[in-house]
Image 1 (cartoon, rainbow, N blue to C red):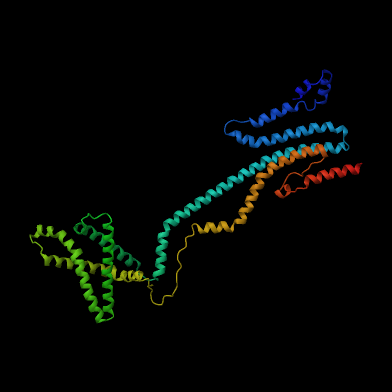
Image 2 (image 1 turned 90 degrees about the vertical axis):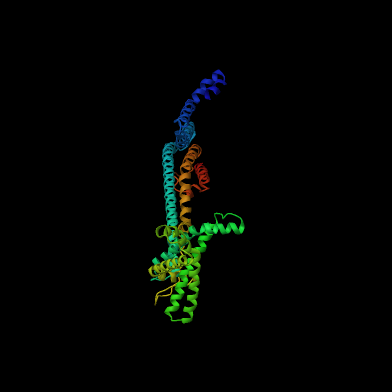
Length: 410
């Protein structure tokens, strides 16, 4: 650039121009070398990181070189040359320190981002683990809540569960045996084949029917214990019709299934009476075994659940349990709300970590210009916080201070 300007001058002025500009003639070449090094120092994925860490410090270094060399031209015309030269030396100290603090600040910012990313990853993993744990433990928590809601200590849980499981097992068996008969009846009535929905409906119907059979036995046993003759007679009739219904429509199918085996081994063909008799014996035997094993303990609990009543042992304290409240999402949200101020402080700290290194370099560049103009820096470096940076009257105070000092010297 300087050679191009010299080429436009007359021959007699070229030597004078070269003598006047020899202090800054080397700067354009050095500037190009520094800038090319900062811009093209690496290749591939390292280009971005190299430019982030070297481009702004290289620009500050170029500004410092230009300011220093231009300030040398003003030394013969300045008063207080000693202080001015000291300011130039301190300027280079501030430049080097600002570049170093820029690198350290960027490193702190990157390290803090890594720490935040690791913290967020741990938080996500903890929430995922709690979610999986809640998904696994929620059924057990619901069962525990139901147990505390409907039952008090001393309730036979095992008998209650066995009563439910036996009713479901017996309903499943009879669903399998009755499905052909029900399908044939449905086809005769509606003229259509029974669809897939018929089996679940039949299963639920049989489950309620078998559970009701246990309930009838329970009511009959309570009436017998209380010596209520009228209730005993009534429930005996009811139980007889319950047995008749189950024998005719359920247990008879089981006897029909083993009739060929009986005929093949004994040669005896079961008739109507013998079939119903065997079905009655089967019903009585199964009901007796299940009743004396677990149903007499589990049926009262089942009836209490259906009636939403509380089964308690004697002298048990009354307490109304609370429904379980899952903490897998409410806990983190409440913690997030309570830590709102902490997040604000951390975001401000991240802003400082990202802003201060860049502002250090910009302030150092401004100091280079103000040292040349006013013989003193505009900013006191290093910046320690954003409040220090946001002081709007810093530069004005410097300029006014320089003006007042010059006026006092005059």
